[in-house]
Amino acid sequence: MSVPSDGRNVVLTGFMGTGKSTVGKLLARRLGYRFSDLDALIVERAGISINEIFERYGEQRFRELETEAIRSLGGVSGRVVATGGGAVIAPRNRVLLREAGLVVNLTASLEVILCRLNGDQERPLLKSNNTPEALAALMAARENAYADADLRIDTAGKSVEDVVTEIATFVREHQ
Image (cartoon, rainbow, N blue to C red; front, top):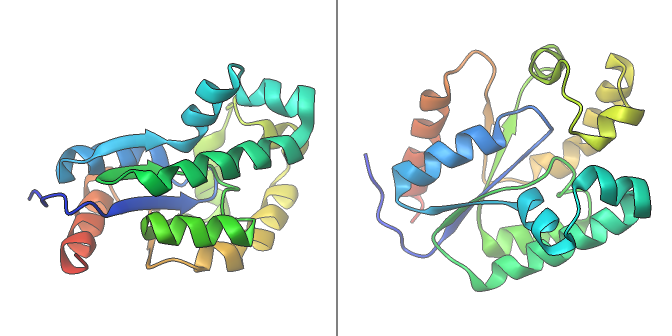
């Protein structure tokens, strides 16, 4: 099933480990869209890794760079955009993401996320929030921001293909 691009982007939000990048790449191929990873865009613009941004300049500076990257989406179309897990924290980012396209929030239980993130050293927030209790608190703190979406999908127990099909159907119905 292919959905012709009408210029509307699909923005994937959700906690780390919910499948945004994995789903996003396959979804983009399915829709005939380009795939953009917001974190990769930030790294490209900053010239250093996200871990280095956090270490050198702190989370606040990273969030500023994230907002700049989100603003840059205003001029693009026909993309599937995977955001970082905290991109929706700032209300202004949620507004910009909604203006950029359909917002799809991917979810999973804490247990599923812990399994998916096991051994992942590339996520800076895991360095300071690496206990199940800390991750649960972070998830809870972001829940209202994640809920601000056009569609929410629990990815636990579903194949990537099933999630992509669900989103592609939604996109087709809302073009």
